[in-house]
Length: 359
Image 1 (cartoon, rainbow, N blue to C red):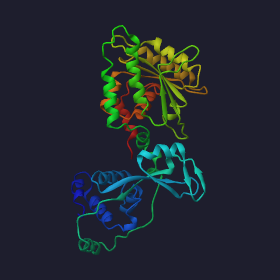
Image 2 (cartoon, helix red, strand yellow; image 1 turned 90 degrees about the horizontal axis):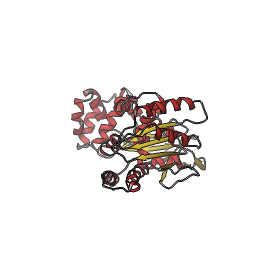
Image 3 (cartoon, one colour; image 1 turned 30 degrees about the horizontal axis):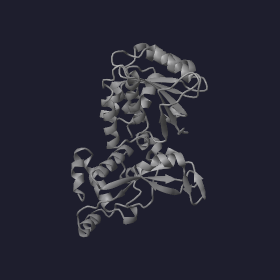
Image 4 (cartoon, rainbow, N blue to C red; image 1 turned 60 degrees about the vertical axis):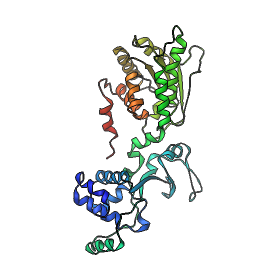
């Protein structure tokens, strides 16, 4: 073994595969030590895509490889940008300029590919490498770049959602601070009590890129606790198509009483008269069981109309998932929507995570 870091991989992967990968990576020509994809490894070493993908992630975790993303022009297929995960969201929303086509291009997830480059070489001499090559004279190296749909973000939804929602440590610290204020003694000041939950919800939702939030929106008949404008609507299936053009949140900072159908019906009546597709009841306690039934029936009633109308709910238990377990909010919202649209009231987020396994 050239890379000593791969010795422990033999306990997880087929030892022969690990040794072949170790040799292949070590003997890659310098100009081939970038734009490495799971498809390349799969085709070169004759293994399933999933194993190749996992091996690359293992090497990344050991500091041998560094992950980045290649943006290809949807028309000429030329690589027009090399970006980090933090830049994915802006490229999908704002587009990328193609110098070959001489125009801006709208980019979709199937135009962005996950790739790696070698950033750490094995601690061995060139003589040792040469001896190993002599033993494998029949092992041919290819120098073409191989991409397929499985390498694109269209097949990696979790990466896509992480690009749009990834709070840093200071954000989670602020989430916890605002949560600690929910149980403060506000006396008879119900406005301040309700505002405490609204501030927390706005802070969390506001960390979704290209989503703007406010607690000051009024109509002729209603004042919304929280309103979120979503500037993203995608051509591919995603939670953004339900969040856009905006969604409305009703908050209830009350520990003693569950929100009932009155809250559900209020939200339904609001989204019935505007372009919002999604309403959220965000309370301390979970809603009464009749709320889910009402939300499901209303969804079915409007499922064939020009827009969906969906009500989902959040409680303190969901705050634990979002703040303490740090689940991705967009994945979690998609799970909540899935519960209503599929009528899977007992579905758990752990079950739902199976849908995000990248194979």
